[in-house]
Image (tube, rainbow, N blue to C red; front, side):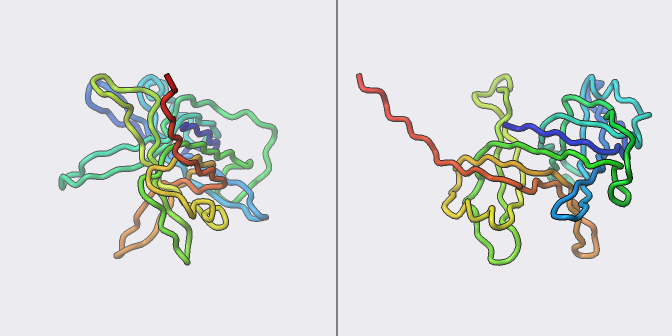
Length: 221
């Protein structure tokens, strides 16, 4: 399971030509929601490929839209031949949001409470390591819903998950390879290190359902 819906304002839309006469459109979706009496802003990186990208209207810059899709991991090499990867929301559907007259909601954000809902089901890449300080961070391998030609199994996207207490306590007995269902929000985080600004897109869990690997006994003959 890999289903995401996010609403917000389109910012920094950019089109790029890819190999094979393909087009990639990227933009940020800016939104806000209220949690525990506080307004929290988020930034979601969005990618459009294929027909969606060709139909993308540059007039959407600054408009309120809804994006329905899934989280995908993209890998590439930079000019120094160093491997890089990033996770973004790949849109399956994109449409303008129709809503009643809006009141200001959150400084510099969308004028209405935005939707940011992520549903993932996958397997833990490693056994979670508990931390006395800060959140629990895990990586979830989420299988894609199709098998590429020439392969026996589907590819997987590796999604970083941030889990705060007390939710993290549910993974106290979890191990590498265990199934895990995550509900949460997707956001691009930034931090300073060595004088440089670094970015990473992660899911912050609002709910987790750990599972136990199911072993099926062979049927009696």
